[in-house]
Image (cartoon, rainbow, N blue to C red; front, side, top):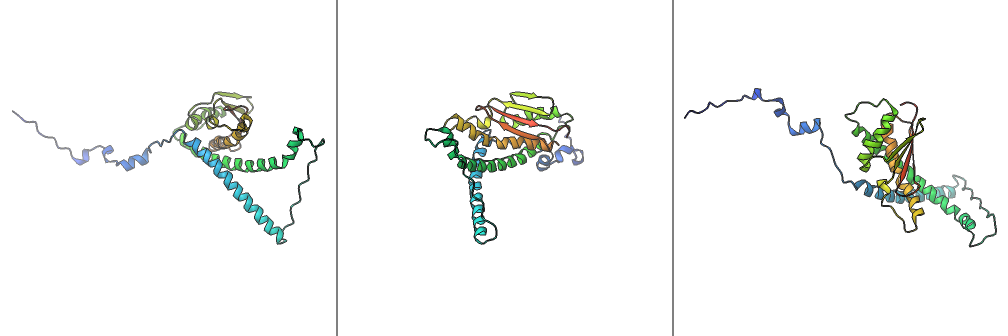
Length: 247
């Protein structure tokens, strides 16, 4: 019984791929990182609550500093707000009077929520810019505005909210309307005070998604693009995108 001669393979004849260590391969082609689909929902809930507490602390601190400066004579005292006179005789059953009496409180609440909305949008700008850069790593440059909008409606939407936009409309003059009939961020949002209060609160929770879309557009070269979120009935949300004439 004859035995076959053994074949010796020299180290110089080994393929180049066998010389690449796993660490070098990971640097050349980094693995995809996956997160739980509900992570962004939980994260946004905590972000809104955290920013609300942070804004309250910052407002109290600024008022305390202002009072100290007024007491020290460094700045003049603030002018008192002019009272709003009711149009009719005050009546507990009159809804107009009750609204006027709460106008000062509502103005303070609106000012506080506007500050939170601004900070949420700023967070979304950073997240959206980095997200768009990640998704466009292997893509060629966009040459048409419509291609950019389609990228937002399909790729960005699917990556962030696990679906595509339900409806896209445009007036062909730089205005695009992106409609999501069941926007994931506000799908489970409710309020014990009723649907109207839930819709009002939902407008705060779509500030970060609006900033995310705007940040993605800015990273793609449309630095002057504007994004406005509108909610008429939950859980539907509409984003109006105003694109410039050219990148």
